[in-house]
Length: 481
Ligand code: GCU
Ligand code: CA
Image 1 (tube, rainbow, N blue to C red):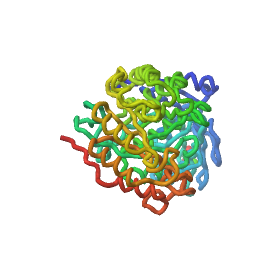
Image 2: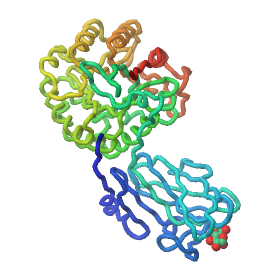
Image 3: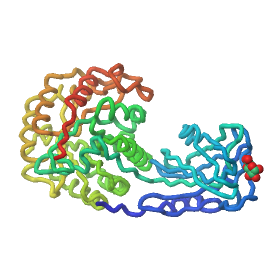
Image 4: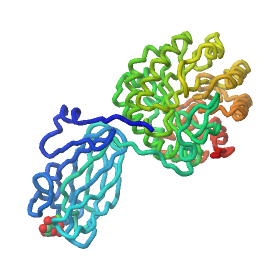
């Protein structure tokens, strides 16, 4: 379906002086890079470099002392995301020589198996997967028994790999690649569906709220269909460090995808309100995201959070400039288009949905975004959403049960009216926000992140309890035929 382009890290590694003795780098497949690091060039604790057993690569291998704690530590360079680590070893005994593997200080395996290979000259590989960060990482293998580790030849790191989401049972597993059908959202079987999920808070402020435990809770306990990853551009966000935020997005996309949820990649432009201000940045960012993840079925591109103070015609021009950048690498991408008036289809700027209906973006497989806050936005917004959804594809990429600041009193009565309308018209929605910020719209009480607990209701504010209940119930009804 999509053909990601080859990306090579050789130039980067060469520039960093890392291609040379003890290191070989070669590209193995689209978008993945493989690098090998010899054990004899690594940091050795309680072990010696030897070369008396043939079949090793490089100049030799490390004979780890036969004792608890003998170790080899490598410092591979990587891009952020999932990586495969392969340890090449020989073990001429009949007994397993387990080692504990840590990556950047975190245990990846307490006892990775290094079984007997039949002879000290017979070399095999033991494999684990781990999440690496951009730039330098530390990979440490430590003997955990008195027999010590095996003889270690080298570490091979295959990074920049992307893992397709699971295919069974989960929202992505059932629905697959989404597309627009008429004015509705349809799954891979061409059936209309509604997605219900959450948005993160700004990833520059609350990355600690998006971790393994919180994502497990969102996918399992909450039964959310998607997570919107809210990456601000200004306010300390992307523009301050494009590499860091792009890598953060890569890593989070992998983690959300692994749990079978859809990912909304939110280009959270807000101030200034004209998205054209960030057009070149957006092209750079979305080209890399689409190239890396375009072969996944679960990526939705939310290209302009809340345009404001800007005519619809200028916003439309931005959309028509960014869409081809994404489609070049991800032709069947579902793209979500920000509307004027802070995503109100113009209402908050004195316009209306007819601005869009009469002058739609020249593209297919796109949906227009609508944002509302039930404590601030009443009948005018509700009626706009209802009318618009009959004429153009609409996706609610953000809403709150309180006022437009994400704070203040909840209005659950009016929120229920919106939810009823969206259920009836199968309009997908996303609630703001999955963090422990102090405001009433952040679902967790302050101090919940990063440790949790995230499942259940013990750490939820009233808005959190209410929205969790509406995501869990009723159960998703995703037709497959
Ligand atoms: C032998 C072998 C070594 C190995 C050692 C061991 O001495 O030659 O290479 O490290 O056994 O049992 O660990
Ligand atoms: Ca030994």
